[in-house]
Amino acid sequence: MATATSPAARTVDMARHEHTSRRGIRRWLIAGALAVLIPAGAGTAWALDRFVIEHVEIADVDAYEAEEAATSQTSKTTGSDETSETTDASVTATSYTSDSADIEISTVVTGTGDETVTYYVADVTLGDATVLRSAFADNSFGENITETTSAIAADNGAIFAINGDYYGFRDTGIVIRNGVAYRDEGAREGLAFYQDGHVEVYDESTVNADDLVAEGVWNTLSFGPALVEDGQILDGIEDVEIDTNIGNHSVQGDQPRTAVGVIDDNHLVFVVVDGRSEGYSAGVTMTELAQIMVDLGATTAYNLDGGGSSTMYFNGGLVNNPLGTGTERGTSDILYIAG
Image (cartoon, rainbow, N blue to C red; front, top):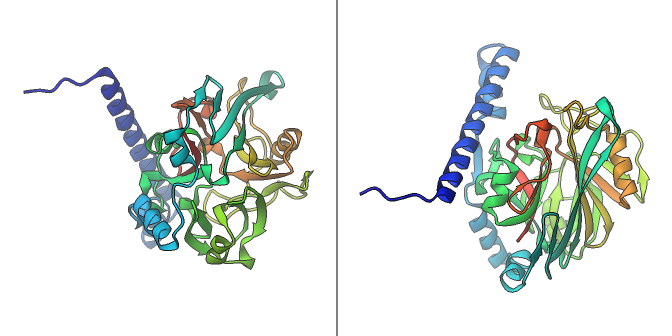
């Protein structure tokens, strides 16, 4: 006998099907583009392996983090998971208030016509630094594993989320998430969130992941460049190359952007700038992004993955309008706060 399916369940199933379909189409398009750009034979096989085929190193991140936490005798759920069970929260269309975090979201529109820029600001105060967590696509760690920011956020019970550093596009960088070291291949300027609430820019080549964890680092981001330090916009940020991978050099000109800024210990500001959408939002340069962060009071600010990845999520839906189409691009990871 057939079982009736509720409208809500059908909506969820349709969303999952659409997400899976888009994910498959994206991989097919990347594979096709690489096949055209790279000579046939070993080169194409290498490119598909490097940029398209999933390489899963840890298939169940939740279990892995729980095991690591038990080994280190440090609770994995310090912060968001525990407080969300015991704290009454107040939610509006643009705000969230609980004992664990206060979130205020605002929309800013500047300019007119083709020079219009639209961006979204989340001013976040944390009750504890570990309330800000990270999650991986498909609850798996490795290369080329992607889901949309919204899908990862929903899977993790997030009230708020932004896209992360797309660690899975590369095999370098120091990756520490939720107090657990996943990768130790220092390559660039990173950002470290400490459990005592302070955040700092650091040189990955001068340290190792295990030492950072021992020093109290809770999360790291490996993208960049750093935009602001000591309240000052840094020189040369338009020309910094994040990687030498295909399609991931410095991205100049007006673009969609995502950034995180530090106002004080446990007081952060997240910005997502939409772009590539005439009349709605042209995007910004790296220097203009840095100025936005300074104007918001950030003393330190750091650039994250941008373009089609730039996404802000709140209370079950998109805040921004990626590329003016409302269509998210898959990414490998998010930063989030559980509701």
